[in-house]
Image (cartoon, rainbow, N blue to C red):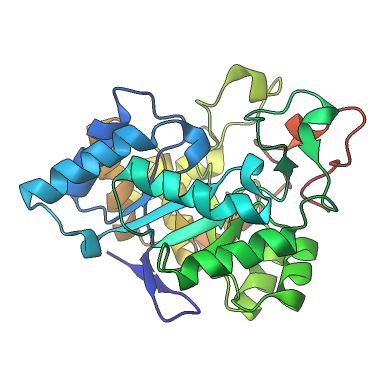
Length: 315
């Protein structure tokens, strides 16, 4: 398994199993299948609502002796309603309880957006806390404390822009190791990748295949399909692999982590096998030419009348 070195001298497996949208009753089996297939990286989040089932699956594979805890890389994320400094560690402790773990390998701030503590999904402006009421810097200080307590080995962020990263880097004691963002040939994010690479921050790609199975309410009309793109399909035909494998391999060639989600045993194995797909310079150039700055997850669900979150990826 290819790994990528982080700025804290740890190494993260480059392909992980994504668990966003994995349904109850399916996600646990998917985790077991992935670990048996050779995955050593599982990406989780409190808001996905499936960490208890994932925890049961992890406990099962540990008891079976399939892997040891130290063999796996487990990531989870702080949800928006626990950004106040006093709420961060309790939220992490709940995640650890649900996952049946003593520590995480990586804990991320899920979004640079804050909700009131009793709000799970914000539906009106009053549900939010402004960045003045819940400063990212204070959230990060609690993340640093969580790491110092041994609750997580690494800390990072998700959905942070260059501007937000600059602000964080100016004030942090512990530099983030990771920024998890939407990333694929339609959204190559070269400026963000270059910025992070220069500062020793790795990017993890979510929705690497276009997230076609996300909720209908998050979709736009006439979304472009990555998997049906003629350039991607042509490269896949030449390589004797699937379009999904081309897209996953593209991230590895850019030295990014990638977390494709699947609950289907065959595709779980195929996704892992993407590490064996070799893309040459012409392939990479052809895929680079697909960039159109297109987001499948555009953040507009945070833009409610009367709140201060607009263009969250540019703030």
